[in-house]
Image (cartoon, rainbow over all chains, first blue to last red; front, side):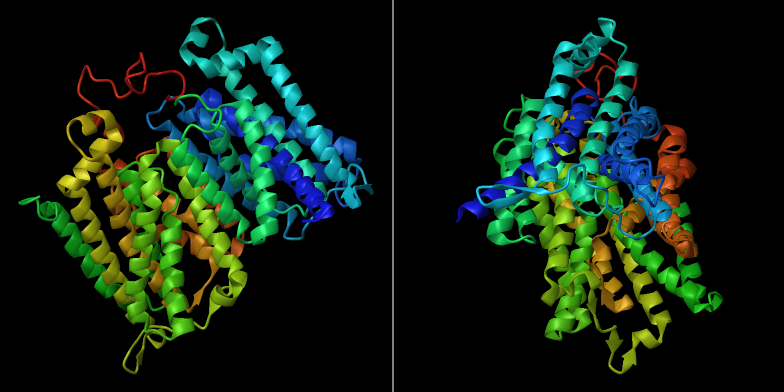
Length: 292
Length: 345
């Protein structure tokens, strides 16, 4: 294997890993606090990309990329709260709520995907790149956008970690995560924490969507593949463990990049699936997950 | 199991007889070929959804691989006929066998895992199956589908020239499937599935073999699903990747939930009704799937037991099956089941 192939594999592995980390950390936060899974998380990524495109592109409102990104993040935070209020909140106290929420969020995903198809039409869209051009590293041309994703994602995740560790709100979130009932007794307004979690998780997904929208076409189904990888990541890293999720995301990103190189694009998902099965059977709580 | 027979009360037998009579006479009433087509599709979807009800509704297993069992039945029979020239009749049996084998394979990791992990695994499996079908273009026709699938025939009698023949054949399969499913869910086996769903620890402590029962639930739910998949391709004469797709999956889920999960009859009837509604909305494009998705959400809000559940058992079905006083459904919870203000842990 030559150096430039290795660099190419690493770059695509880290770009994918970054996107998976953003997606999976949102899923992991929701799981950690609510013990529920949001199957509409992939459509949040898609909506983030479409929102940024609509506000920034010359065929949309043409307000410039930075406005587009900002508005997309704000809209998606609100969208996350709305999704919680409509698809999760009504079922939270019901027996068997976890299965019900899977089904309502799946239905929500179908609704949002088809809405995007209806509103934006079948023509593919593409976001402007935040940074254009390429740099050469070890004789390999690397897009600056890719480089930005690789650098920016750890910073965002670090900010998220600081928010969870250092702020009072973050403390409350972790309290709910560890013990819902004790948090309630200690005066944490759990009813306020849940929508907040969904807002944060939706913003992370939107950010992933904005990054992805600059690399590939924006389509109504663009969120399904990243969501599927994020599933694998959270199982791999351990559901509810943020460090495990982030490490897992990069490991899965790299494994996928190597698999694409070795067995090709079409068989790479099979390799990932086998990894998923092995992890589930050998270590069902994930690499860094505690006991269930 | 003895003495319970098919688990039919006199009232149910009357309903069955009426249903079959209506079914036999229906092609005389439906003269519009398009309506007949919708009815045929609806019955196929009824088979798939009501069989899914066995794992999703009765066993309470978060199984999202069911759509792949349908797709595998479809592609097995389609590929055998197109690539190897094998008779569709053998293909239908092969489709059922292939779906059952795949169900057995998927169920092995799925029964070892708990709740959410089963959902993730089976969901990933269905997506994987779709990705593989799309990628193997030379064999499966890829994204554009497998074309030139032969229709069913007996001697010189070509079914595709007589859609009524498809109507009666598929109706008979739906009948067989529904009788089979009702037999399963009213048997001791079916009761043990419900026991495992409603209070796993208690059921296991009373000697219900969890892994074996769930394994069998997967197998039983896949047989007629595979047959339905094969019938679907030999009726439409094409196997397209949409049989694994999200849209069809949403339709099946809405059929189960709107009809009434864990009722069998609910999905059987809702399958035909919702397919009709869905086909009528076909000119609306994506809006059709938006309406179906909304239907699921609204049903979950207001009638979580589904229409059939509402008609037959009223609002408190879940409570009937809760464990007796003094035994909490969730031993970790200081609250009784359903009263906890937070999420179920």
